[in-house]
Amino acid sequence: MGVIERYRVYLPVTESTPIVSLGEGSTPLVHCPRLSERVDRAVFLKNEGVNPTGSFKDRGMTVAVSKAIEDGAKALICASTGNTSASAAAYAARAGISCIVILPAGKIAAGKLLQAFAYGAKIVAVDGNFDDALRLVRELGKAGNFVIVNSINPDRIAGQKTAAFEIIDDLSDAPDFHLLPVGNAGNITAYWSGYREYYDLGKSTRLPVMLGFQAAGAAPIFYNRIVEKPETVASAIRIGNPASWKQACAAITESHGAIDVVSDEEILAAQMWLARQEGIFVEPASAAPIAGLFKCHASKEATYSFQKVPALSRVVCTVTGHGLKDPDVITAQIKELKSVPATVNDVRRAVGL
Ligand code: F0G
Image (cartoon, rainbow, N blue to C red; front, side, top):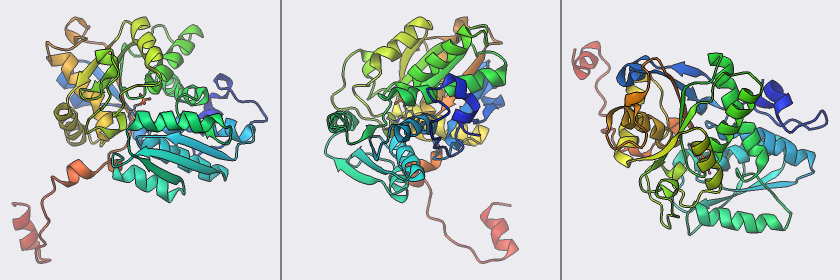
């Protein structure tokens, strides 16, 4: 069951909206014992990497594309650091319409570019970053030939808020803390709107403290200024001027939360730690809240310290995209595999038995 079918009454659809779905959502909320032990709190990961195209974008895309088809759209357009383009391309293919994706040249993870190509999108690489690509999309969108499916489209945000509903449905209440990566800031906006909506309906007794994490080299909200040349290994969140900047600040202020930064080294260490300690392999951007969790727990420099947080608190981190999308950093660490003769003794020796 996709998110529109599951949460129809909370979404901007009617009986006559044609539903374009790939069975997105209903992703696992995984309790992580080693992570919980390390930070002395009960930690759960919302594993969005298991969505149909491997990221959380599918939740918003099913709503945005269904509405676009209802309105008679013949083509979609988006700017992307990779995941939005993969998702838009897939849902456009599903709906039988075309999709144009504008990408920052050379900065898209291999798996994401491959997805956009496989799903048949028209791909344009521009000399510039994501912020330049989004500016072009806004301009091209004005002519009315395309529906923009970036998170500036409110239907995207509406779809993405369903992740907060699922968490409350699974835990029977909202968590005390919610940690997530922040790039263009649509997702933190969507989660906060979902948490508030369920709270107002009496489906939860509390609102979580929202903690957003940016990469240190691409942290406009943290530094409170546009970053002209954002740089980070976490290419998904390599954004210098987030479209939902104001909404992200509102979510942080209203929830008494914080925005903080993590370094590329911390991100990559957290990515590997999570894969090896919990069996969950995520892309670098998705490891930012894990690095952030470690920082809140251990570092005096953390914007939000867990020192004063009761030990029984429940913490949810959203891991936004699958690790296989962005293999380059880890591929570079794999030593060349030399083959051994196909005998039990040779294999024993090779593994050190
Ligand atoms: N994590 C991943 C894996 C992402 O792809 C993105 C955004 C984010 C986190 C940040 O979410 O932008 O809502 O704050 N990716 C967009 C894209 C920008 O084009 O795929 P956000």
